[in-house]
Amino acid sequence: MFVDNVVGHVNRAFDRIVIVIATLCFLICTYALIDTIHVYYHANDNSLLAFRPDFDSDTNKLGKLSKECIAWIKVNKTKIDYPVMQGEDNSKYLNMDPYGEYSLSGSIFLDYRNNPAFTDDYSLLYGHHMEQGAMFGALDKYLKEDYFNKHKSGWLKTNKNKKYKIKFFAVLEGQATNTLIFAPTSTSINDLNQYITKHAKYYDNTPSHSKKIIALSTCKYPDTDDRIIIFGHLEEAK
Image 1 (cartoon, rainbow, N blue to C red):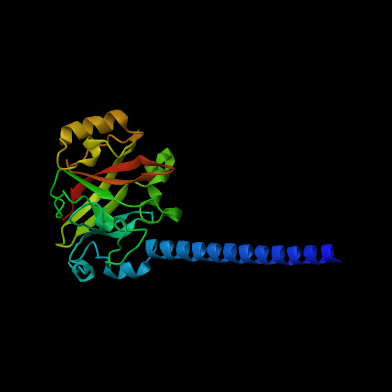
Image 2: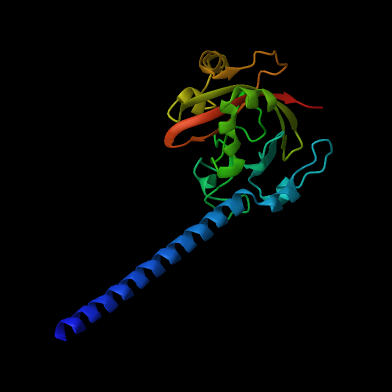
């Protein structure tokens, strides 16, 4: 009888432990799911589209979004359709959305060293690699030649109504420590062009009327130091 009572207590205690563990697992999974939904909600926040300028008109609402919203970029036939921010360093908008609120998906932003009017020979944009093509998550698709060939156009419009058409001409994989790519205002445009020509995974040598280059960069998972970069010519539109 004594042994049976002990066994009964042990079994009930074990059942309680199992229930507690199962409950904790459920709560953790629920939190993780909610957190994931929250992250991708910010990455796909369609409310930002209300501020997207019309490329062919002089209407521009970017200043109403934020003083640090310097432009809008759109890459045709992709989900890249976002405001471009610029902070006092390259950390500010890693985890801040264009509204100035904390967000794991961050914002698309211009390197802090670049001129916000995109007058530099080489301008560099950053964005997180998010699932389902959000933010700069579509860039890994450019590693397939067929996708690259079908997605070479886009546009950029500044908060001062300066308009550029973008013609993407190269895809490259590199390291975040590569100063030729990731120090945009210290890079010779000739040296950059030579490097791209030599190391590009895919390269379109169609002549361009513009010497200005814009690059879009994102992480290449799972190696956090690896980057996917696509390069385009910025051609001023009238």
